[in-house]
Length: 375
Image (cartoon, rainbow, N blue to C red; front, side, top):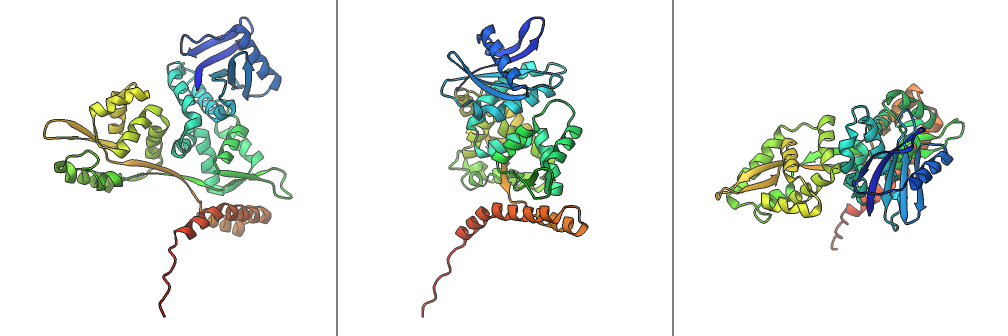
């Protein structure tokens, strides 16, 4: 369980300087802050360190760069600081992106909530958080075009493409490897390790099929059942998937409060009173959450004969890892035009085959055994 979040910088005139902390009543001593600073100085590199100071379990992330900040997360003694590393890297980029106008200061409570949920994210939330990050999308889009890029070339290219602040390219690659989106491997004769795309992230809206089939059992009066089906059908007749829309709906999965509302709407068609009960689960602003879901075309309101508003899902969000079959055409093209060394392409085919085996096994399991003919 997370205890608090501290944002600190180093000022040679006054030593450690706390910019913001959450909650406000959080107390952390100057001596502890100096120990955190010294630990980062010892590593001499941006990134995360973890340490125990008395009864405090600490994960701290140093951004380095032109705006050196220390993002300090205080944890329970039983917590594993390493489980928060990806979340701290994610939060550090959000802070730096909103640094100039100090907009990040108002975001601290939200960022703390986001960090607290990070180790407990389910697969769709974790993928959404990965794809929401601009740097991850840059890297994935480059690999979608080429499939494989040398690590050294990728580092140079990323620094040229993303010039708005610090980012830890090695930390980013490690997170993408953990999520089985990329794989790193060496090929004889190549001066640098190679980064291969092995799984792509697929995002789309989909109809809420269970709710459509069981709308009455899920809380909708039978008199509104046909209207509900019509509204869903009408929405998807004009729906066109796009990167812009995908990024919009991904925010529903990465915002802990919106996700709590979405979870209940995936299972039931409910009244406002039912949604208000989510305050017990930490949804402090139900009104704002509903408004966003309406604006994003996720929810519609249906009014009963008694004048009660019911909230029903019109479109749901689907995000998953998919095997990138399109890469095979890219490999063939690269072989034809000699844009990649044959050894690199052969290694890529081997990597893809190894990745594909679990998919192939699942497909075999789905195949129904043929009935034996009676003789």
